[in-house]
Length: 443
Image (cartoon, rainbow, N blue to C red; front, side, top):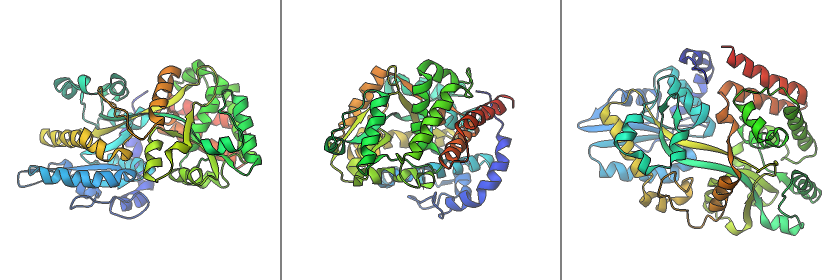
């Protein structure tokens, strides 16, 4: 992937600043909520990254997802209480809010000392633009190869450096309600044709086959990428995602045509294009929808929401071939401008956050098992080992919004919306995706 200049963010930042920066100060859907004594404002994080301290205490800021707040709040409080020489202040954002907030902070040089991120192009942007601390030497000195799984460390190598602290390795499967399938005598599909038949039976009986939501594109993408995998095959799909083969091909047109067919048949919830992807579980939990494409963290969500875990199973989408699963890594990235004291404080907090003591205590708020060499499977989450075994057996491909640079992923998301709304044809959609790829390659 060619390196992108950080100056290209300025126009995007200008458009986002009004909403995102207000979120950093406590308003909006991506509001930063504070578990320390200072709000997660750009001003506050700038002071921290420049080495602000209270007495002999090293203070660091951390931005993470609000879905983990019930665990992170007490963990931060306990860490701060146990360390007179360190203090962590945390701010929370939703999935898309943290992407926007970090991009704006990157353009204004106000990134926190550490922040949650994903691998692929999302985390790669910060490594390629010199914004993340290169952990290669630190990892060697502290023998991270003996602590973390090799696969997770490899996926954190971005922009020619080890760009983060691995926190999870995730695979996605089709979660389904066993009781609903049993009620309508639906067998777990092993072919694409059987999957279509299952959807038809569910729809005939008033059940939405697939729960999804189109806001910001990434949840619908999980289904569209599986259709592309089905029609293109694994080898060609990989070539398309590395831009060796064109997206303007028959496989993409067929996949988008099938996606349109599913839209037209009502196989997704009514109004899904503008729905919030963080709420897709509601339809499945209530029994109005039967399936949701999710990662192994969904077991933890089921436990959090006090659902009966025995009602939920998983199966690989029958795309053909080995039925590969999509996969991605999550990490904590560290600011390239951190002092030695700040970096050490950040890593010490991460070690505490992901300690066995805390993962046992707050298991449902982690994507388990951790990407560590000695990782244990979580108790009470039966689908997790099944999914990981399936991924090992069937193989994986990098989830599309990590395989693609942001501008190309956005083009795909626009195509998804356009097809669902009847404004874009599958043929035009394939062309638009490839046009975005060509524009990116010609920079």
